[in-house]
Image (cartoon, rainbow, N blue to C red):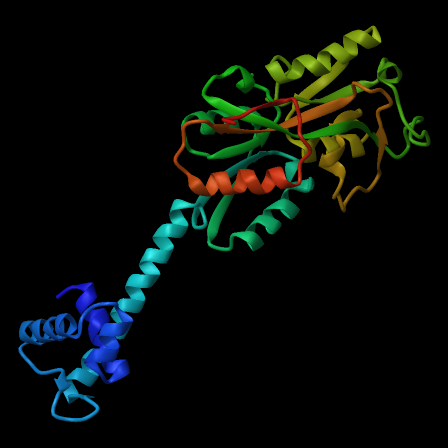
Length: 309
């Protein structure tokens, strides 16, 4: 028994004619008659009553008709899903993002992607940037959104694209003397106690270089009380008037509970943080390529990119 025999039988049963069924498949009536006879011989029973005009299914043929219909539908579904998988229309993407990035527009873009590709499942992991880089390199994640704290851009295995350049802002407690200002400069923070947000939780990673250089450019070394990559904890300490902190603006964009906190933009062109998308060149995840293509639709061309293209 083969798929063609099932399809021929379904056509004969639907047309109630060997000749009409043969025309549907562009074969001779003799060929389709032989295929149906071979099918009946394999089953050891008669499926079609040839004495009737037009022909009719036997009781056994009627049962087989419904079963064959279900079998062919399942085969067609399997073929369609296989073809979708080859183009990335189904599959799984493991996404990692750094702490605080959940307040960016990432969720909006994931929602748009899900609507376009409802059969692709994505899972999300929130980690520090060093841990994200490690999981990407060990194939535990397919793509990450992170600061370049470990200099991933120098790794020839890694493709990357600038996802967002976010302006920096200062988080102050409401009673701070600067709280009524419109903006601040790095020079204004000279005498402040800094609660330092670091990509890795310390201040010696590759991703810290840019921020330390900004303090040097302002002419001083910051008075750092502590360093952390936990934005929520830093903001609690600011609200408790332990010090102030400098954050990317996306991390407070959707903050709903900001009691006793004031956020002011940093006033200089180089006061920014870059968030990159990183993924591996050598990966067989077609769903990931769909994701990258969808993200690219909403992004402007950027020179801070290294991709397979």
